Amino acid sequence: MKQLIELIAKSLVDNPDMVIVNEKDDGKTVIYELSVADDDMGKVIGKQGRIAKAMRTVVKAAAAREYKKVIVEII
Image 1 (tube, helix red, strand yellow):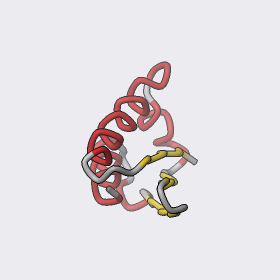
Image 2 (image 1 turned 180 degrees about the vertical axis):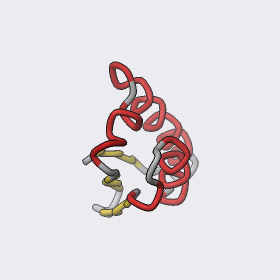
Image 3 (image 1 turned 60 degrees about the vertical axis):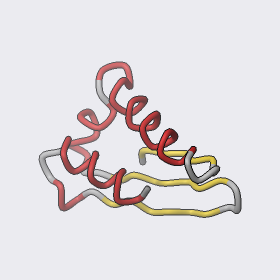
Image 4 (image 1 turned 135 degrees about the vertical axis):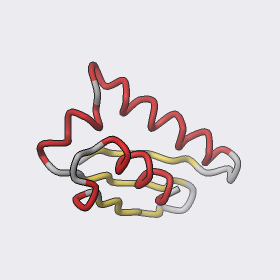
């Protein structure tokens, strides 16, 4: 999952070196914290949050195969 989030985020931003994904596992729930450069924040979120919502949907679909609940937070 972590690599999937990194791949999606790095393809969207101008500074792919600044993309950092931290993983916190709470048993059944896994929280991924996505951090990007300040200039790229709008590109990751998108207009009215559409890109962020699409990214969360893709990650949740991939996590459903492993029967885990996944939360993606953009910091």
